Amino acid sequence: MASYSTNEFRSGLKIMIDGDPCSIIENEFVKPGKGQAFNRVKIRNLKTGRVLEKTYKSGESVEAADVIDTDMQYLYKDTEAWYFMHPETFEQIGADENAVGDNMQWLKEQDMCVVTLWNDVPIAITPPNHVVLKISETDPGLRGDTASGGTKPAKCETGAVVKVPLFLEEGDMIKVDTRNGEYLGRAKE
Amino acid sequence: MNTWAVPKNNRKKNNSSSGWRPSADRETLKARVRLLQQTRSFFYERDVLEVETPILTTSGSTETHLDHFAVGSEAGGSNYYLNTSPELAMKRLLAAGSGDIFQLSKVFRAGEQGRQHQPEFTMLEWYRLGFDLKKLMTEVEQLFVELLADKLLRPSIAMTYAQAFEQFLSFNPFTVSVDKLRTCFEEHSQADAPLLNDKQAYLDLIMSHIVEPRFDADRLTFITQYPAEQASLARINKQDSRLAERFEVFAGGLELANGFHELSDAAEQRSRMLEENKRRVEINKTEIELDQHFLAALEAGLPDCSGVAVGFDRLVMFATGKQNIEEVISFAIKNSYMGKNS
Image: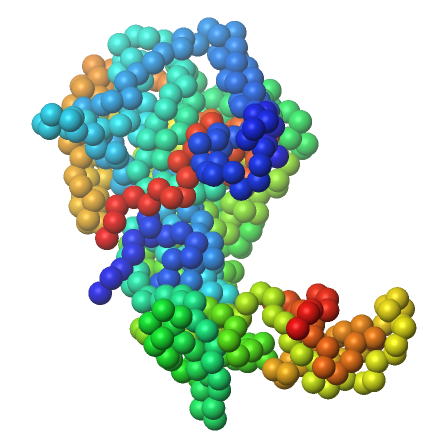
């Protein structure tokens, strides 16, 4: 089984903690002048997204997590899963609700996403930072009101609800930041 | 902030790799040499002799928690070490009659890398004949106040190792149990305590993770009377054999200096080194051949003295307000350095 020594710790390294794959966010080496050295790490549990801290005795070995990030194209969903395709091998893979989580609201067919695989099974999906979505439902637009600064909720084709300016209408295309859900501007078809 | 002048044809963004550039800016490097100069003047004014001892050494340190860089030659054959500390060589000078001495030297410690650590760093070390710890601490304070004046807004304080634990955690480190230390860590960090070899390692854990970060940011904190188990090369207190004649100095939570009333008893020194080697073997480290020249020097007679080692790069960090040691060294070893592969 592959393992890493604390000497190899760096941000982005994937390790196993309490049976879950985790990614190191920050690694801090702590050593009192004459004493025992430690590695204090901040890690993200890749299954739950939770961030936690852990302290290791320096020199200890930690099991490596077989985690890889792959760029894949989102194809479609059925009742069980969301399906993604590798753009070169055309291999398809289904991700379940646990892996897709809240990001399901940003998944638009044919968009390239990052699929995080642990032992070849998807555990997380990262949509593109910016997506272009069509408004499928919103209150009627107030024509001409392009400056008052008010917003209203708009439901998009993927199910996401985004706060948009009052003048936008159903059928309009908008650009949204998937990291915070914010409206960025109008988009062309 | 990077204050280096950038050639005009090189100002495009994302221009190839910038990895060749210094890790410290020009202002910081200027501050660094000013501090070096001030340090030298401080000792020259006091008639302390500047010395240079080898970086490449034939014998290493037995210190349990230090890892050497072992050096071979291209042609193969004999092995040397890069020095982890100039201490043993400087004590040979003292035994030979050098009188008061100081040194600014590069030292090397494998596997030590982080915000406050580099595998190669600069050590300031000095020895004073006839000084007890109190007198040496006074001199350390004089030097630090001279170098760090505008960052030290309040007068220094001193407390014993036990008082530090009592003040911040309300228990005595000499009588506390390992279980209590584990619970204490877990309560404060909301994470499992790592499994460590002995009580001293748990004390190190608590001291470095919980106690030191609580020291006042704008003053020096002197910690005295370390446990005898952490004596290293310090004498044991004559009145209380649980205590070592050792102190450390912190600027805020940053560990700057470690001082000893130097052990001069050759037999005791030898047995401590053998003990350290035994501990090294227990934790799967290599046994280090004892430095026989050093032990012979102690047998010949080390004058009564106290000595202190200062992490010079950290002094520069504190003086310039830099949070990462890489920012005070012209070309730091960056995080891409990963040590051995597994």
